[in-house]
Amino acid sequence: MSQLPSFEDTTDFENADRGFLGALVPAVVSTADGRVVWDNDAYDYLKGECPDTVNPSLWRQAQLCAKQGLYEVTDGIYQVRGLDLSNMTLVEGERGVIVIDPLISTECAAAALALYREHRGARPVTGLVYTHSHGDHFGGARGVLPAGSEQGVPVIAPVGFLEHAVSENVYAGNAMTRRAMYMYGDRLPKNPGGQVSAGLGMTTSTGTVSLIPPTVDVTRTGQEETVDGVRMVFQLTPAPRPPPR
Image (tube, rainbow, N blue to C red; front, side):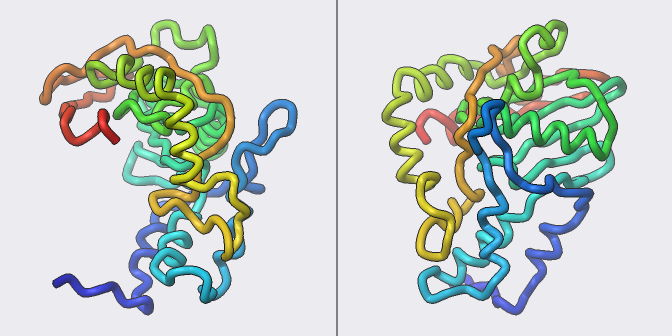
């Protein structure tokens, strides 16, 4: 039987802070007309002590997930965390940067890329990779590759990606949206009696969802692709990932 972690052990927090370069301040992302689609500052209440209304383990997990900003993972590899449900990974190449999983909303993806460029320079996007067909891993595509800028930029995804993305987000779009509202609670007030976090992230952004069709399919494990001087070796794992979720 596994032993529960000690709440006095802060190793997780130290690991989560490793490589931190800078945050988006304020951590609020809006549409062009001013509608707020992401507000990580709404979770500032997590800096306090855990109240009786929240499971202590959920409170601790939420404190970790609420950490926001640009992080250096290792030399040449960076992540923007806390600007959507998912994280956006950026791999520096010879001429620019390869974006992996551009979040849910174009507004959040654009803010994430701008934060990266603030600290790493105005590198062009030279490649885009979708790891799988859930909306939080492709919806912000147009935020990093606006219309007309994608020419010559490879967009890599697992074989069958487009079919599954359309099936889940268009054919079943209304049902999936309602399911997500219940699952992630993005409409609930952000407070200790409302929405605390979604466990794997804070919640889902509510901005503009986009999709750029893949130009390169990953069809087998061991497939190699070189983009902007970066050699990538892919593992294809169709069974554990969608469908189903």
